[in-house]
Length: 401
Ligand SMILES: *Cc1c(COP(=O)(O)O)cnc(C)c1O
Image (tube, rainbow, N blue to C red; front, side):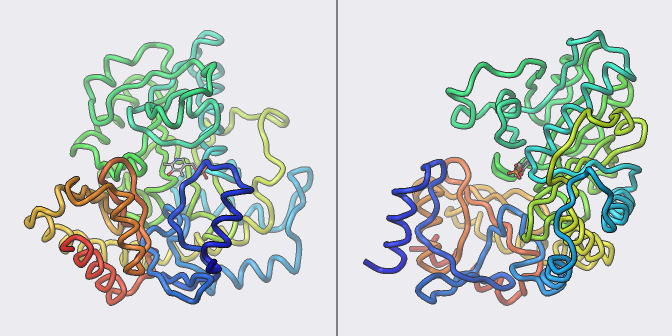
């Protein structure tokens, strides 16, 4: 057996089969490239679902992590540490908000947003105890905890995990009328992704997000933007909502915030909203740890230059122009997305998204399918134009075969 086959057989035997990875075993990576255990190089057009916006082994991030590793890595929030204040101040400033509540994974940050909205509903809005409702969108992806999958519409994510957490209302994504009709006095928040990543990089109709902003403001309901995947440069702006000139009440961030080095997530909001928490009412042993703060501070400094957003916008225009050309030929049905982020619906006759991904892997390009015949393209924002063009050439080869 090859080194690849041996590694996969052993993973299959000893790990739960809750994923179905492509049969490639990565041993090292740099920038937009990964090298497998047999020395083959692959172009990474997934970037860890946007956790690797700054590329693999980014020098600034690795240096920041290494320096912090030598000083102090974990204190727990029982004590202050000397990177915490800077992290919160800088992240709040990046978001033009006032307060930060750090967690680790995206799902934990979404859970934190849910708890914040409910507490705000009872303490500030005056919703009767136990009655708070949060409105979410169909085809959402917000994580994998029991509460979060309770409001998923994906049977794979949800089946067999009941009883489900009550208090959520699901309305069709992009439908303002449905959202207006679902709102009651007990609605405390609307939680949505400004672009739905896992659903296939779905961009809502123009005017939807400003409409959500207007409605939520009118009804004294919090607008919670899950920008875990869409945020931090991916779409060509720091936040996807900026394209619509919309400012939410709360950002939920994760993925790229940890620079592909450590998991770092956070809820970022105003003082009247995050101010609802008192000591002991919420927390995390690892949330806001020194190593996480050091890496995230470097991520924030990099984003403050604006150069990654600019790259994503420029290369994104190029990507969408090139993918657009493919839609004429019949191999590609639709292309959606913004910036360096695209959902590509392949003509089903050419194969499932999985099959296309496997063929691309043979051409040394790594992507991930979503549902049906859709593949998603989300390269690290540091990818060169030449490498991106090379990847697009490989895609054309696979689609014309
Ligand atoms: C990935 C993701 C999450 C969950 O993040 P985890 O770190 O995997 O828990 C939540 N929301 C969105 C939009 C995501 O893309």
